[in-house]
Amino acid sequence: MQDAVVTCFGGAYAGIDPELRPATRPEFGHLQSNLPLRLAGPLGLPPQDIGARLIDAVDISTSSIHRLGGLGTLELAGAGFINVTWSPSVLGAAVRDLLTDPHLGVPAQESPKRVVVDYSSPNVAKQMHVGHLRSTVIGDALARVLTCAGHEVVRQNHLGDWGTQFGMLVEELLGEDLRDPAAVAGLDMAELLALYQRAKVRFDDDPGFADSARRRVVALQSGEPTTLALWQALVDASMTEFDAVYSRLGVLLTDDDFDGESRYNDRLPRVVDDLDALGLLTESAGAQVVYPDGFTGRDGASLPLIVRKSDGGFGYAATDLATIRHRVDDLAVDRVVYIVDHRQSQHFEMVFAVARAAGWLPDSVEVHHVGFGTVLGPDGRPFKTRSGETVTLTALLDAAEEAAAASYAGPEVVRMVANAAVKYADLSNHLARDYVFDLTRMSATTGETGPYLQYAHARVCSILAQAPQQTYAAGTPHHPAEQRLALELAGFAPVVAKVADTLEPHHLTAYLYGLATALTAFYESCPVLKAEGEVRETRLGLCEATRRVLSTGLGLLGIEAPKRM
Ligand code: ARG
Image (cartoon, rainbow, N blue to C red; front, side, top):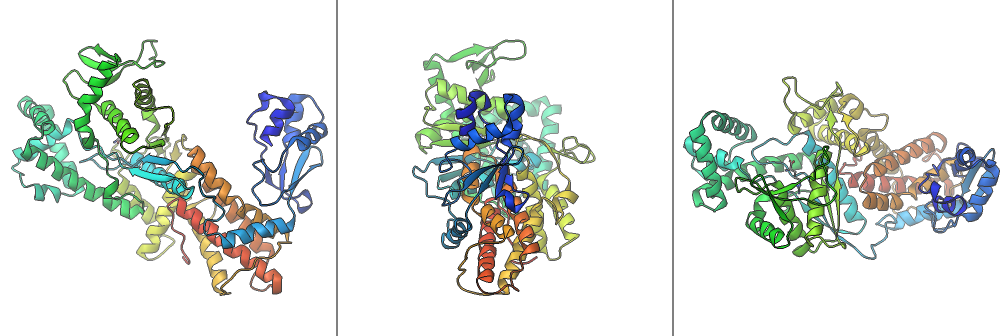
């Protein structure tokens, strides 16, 4: 319908949303748009004329409304509405397709892309905090959706496991006579944090220690065995802690996905040398920098991307440049997706610009920074503990489990509900938006929440369990609530494609909520188990198709779909 608007009324109206909504009454068809009414003002034309022209221009076989195997019809109605209607047999066929297709209508990719999803990426010897929660949850959902859409996904956990702080940490270990790598690798998160704090205090207070810490960085970078063994032990200890969080959250990340900054250490000098050879490098206050085109600060001066600091150390940006080269040259990716806090968006834009300018990132490779907003506390400010510290991810998950335990019993169910509450709330917000971590609202079993969708799934499972049968021969839906449910079901494949394309998981959360709402409306007016004959078959078929779409859809969000709860 968007195309038709442009055809009829020009590019000024490109991208206008037809806002197709379920029709308020059965005689209005299945979906309804008030677009002619909305355009009447700006166009200065009677809505009926606008509607008639739009209906003439819409090619429904290519329109986004067309998500069913057969054509719907468009009709002008009322003061300026367009009604869209499908024949009941087309709706029935769409449900039957879902019952026979294990991919639920998601087509095979004609040209599958190899996509790196760079996500979670916490820092060694530090706690994972709420920012890493968002990266982990969003990245995991996107990795699942892209895989479902037929792409080949390479997960990369770009661990912060390198840098000057390790000089300080290793020096502290040696100073405390903690020289046994096996013992260091066994430290838990609390012990690692305490070590970090002790090292930091000494680094700030004792210039002699700070000097040795700096020399220790050089030893680490040149691969001195004792230093390297202790560094590795610190990384191992942290990885054990991160893995515990990943398995608690039920995310896909494993040890094979760790692709930390340290991996790129050997490639950093080449980044600088090659930039120099390309004539892109400039010296600024002793540092080696690149000024990519189009980046200026508030004062209008060009912004530098620092690749080598004045002390000779390579920074975060140099590592990201080396990482891009590895992904393009060695992994042969088509698309790279970074899921990182929106505060790093300028860093990524500049890194991408430099990589393009250097010819390391060909036009054929797409890169996206999927930024996201901040998690806020109940006071509407960035989430902090009472003493003003960043809230750790573990503390947050503990709180979510406590909230779930108020309504559910049994550790497994509690964890499942808590994860659903946290993940759904996170994914259902527009990425860029900050949101308040309100456990009461997130954990409620009514409203737009993860537990509500789990409940909808469990409820449909319990109906199906009372009518065990091998096959579901869905017939033609006649009741408007049956038809609306069928129509919602047909929207699954398009929404998967939309999320894979836009990298915005909230389309899928909204879709599943709409499906659950249609299911509730269906229950209210269409008895399933008490119905007979073909009507019963059709309704059971609708229940089974809904069960499949809900469980697959929740699965794509990384949310478990329980049979009972
Ligand atoms: N470790 C970084 C942080 O905690 C995130 C890394 C994101 N990925 C990347 N390729 N830079 O802020």
